[in-house]
Length: 169
Image 1 (cartoon, rainbow, N blue to C red):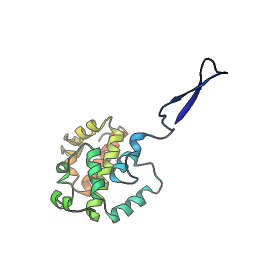
Image 2 (cartoon, rainbow, N blue to C red):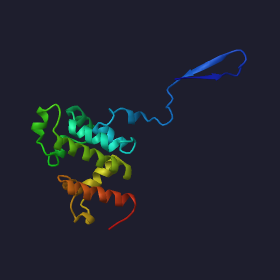
Image 3 (spheres, helix red, strand yellow):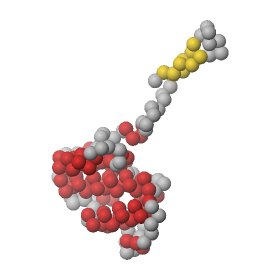
Image 4 (cartoon, one colour):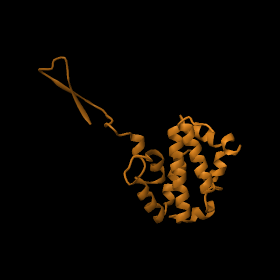
C-alpha cells in the first residue's frame, strides 16, 4: 500500500512513503491458516457465522494430515504429547493423508479447547502450564490427562470458562 504525503514545499513537490499498513480488522498472524482448518479454529473460534455447522462438515470429510501438522506446530506441541488423547496411534496417523471421523472430531475438539485457553490465559505458555498442573476442582487431576474422553473435554472446558469469569468451585 502506498501513502502519499506532502513535503515542506507542498506546492512544488509531492513525495511518497512506501510501507506496509495493516488494514483495519486484519491481523496478519490470523490469516496464515486456511479457513476452518484446526489451527484456524484456535485463532478464530468465534469469528464465523455457521461456524459449528462448517466444523461438522469438516469432521465428516476428515482432517488432512497437513492441517494436523500445522495445528501441532501452532500450539508449540509434538504429536507424542497428544498420543494418549487421539483415538488413533501416531504410527497409523503417519500413514494416512486424511483422518477418520473420530480422529478428526478429537482434533477439532483440541483446536477449540486451545482457542478458548489462549483467549482466557495470557499466553500459550501460561495455558500449557495450566493444562499440566493438577487442579483441585478437577479432583487434583492434570487437565491434559482428562482430554482422552468427551466428558473429560467438557470438564476441562467448563473449568476454563469458570476461570474466564472468575467463578471458582
